[in-house]
Image (cartoon, rainbow, N blue to C red; front, side, top):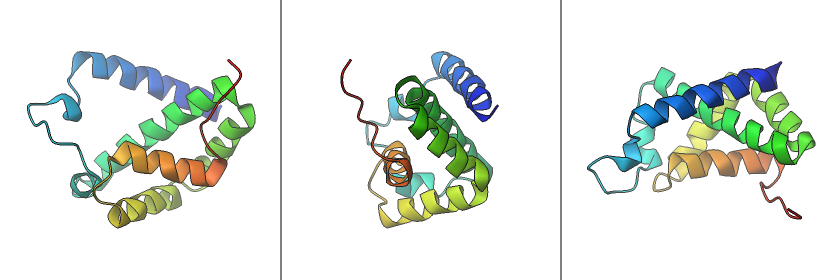
Length: 118
């Protein structure tokens, strides 16, 4: 059920990004950094993180079912703790793109997103 939820969220964000330019594609050519992200309102941060984790689950599900289950279990078990862990990591690494930090935290929790043998 959680994978279906994340799949639907991933499809929705895919459709929305096709209609609206992303922050990284705006007139500002500077890299979007975690230092900017942590200044956002909490509900916007949570939405961005939820969508990113949902996409990670969807990708993992196509390549490594155990990793997908790990991510779903970790994030679904206590979303508030997962958000806090990711935001605290962003505060420690403010110059990195938020997606990179989210990926690093997810990999630390459930292993790398390296899929070989295609």
